[in-house]
Length: 121
Image 1 (cartoon, rainbow, N blue to C red):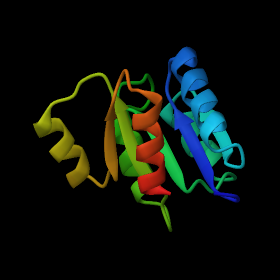
Image 2: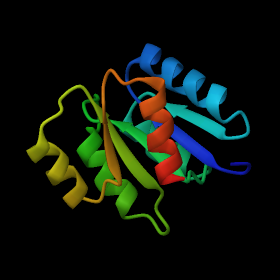
Image 3: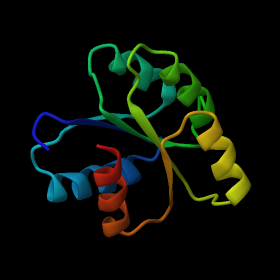
Image 4: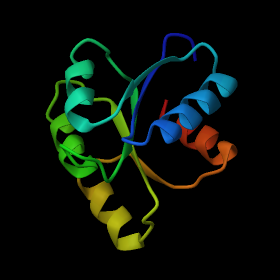
């Protein structure tokens, strides 16, 4: 997966650290970028052309849904996988209908994260 880029957006620094550590262990050649909220993420996406975004649903400033909508407006938008502890089928269907490429429930097992990444890169 050399040359691939993933952005991890979550307001919880520990979650960002865990996700990034798991990705580095699985795919050491993937370039990572982190953001603590949607506003910062959108600014960083101006210079970091992500192939995949792992996006928390509930964050300050811009929610995951709002951030997803702004990402989808970009030319050649990256795939976006939503991460959330709320895991209802109707919510998943709604998010997929809004352009999310997938959904991963928190907490997740590293193998589940690996499968999600491999499916979307």
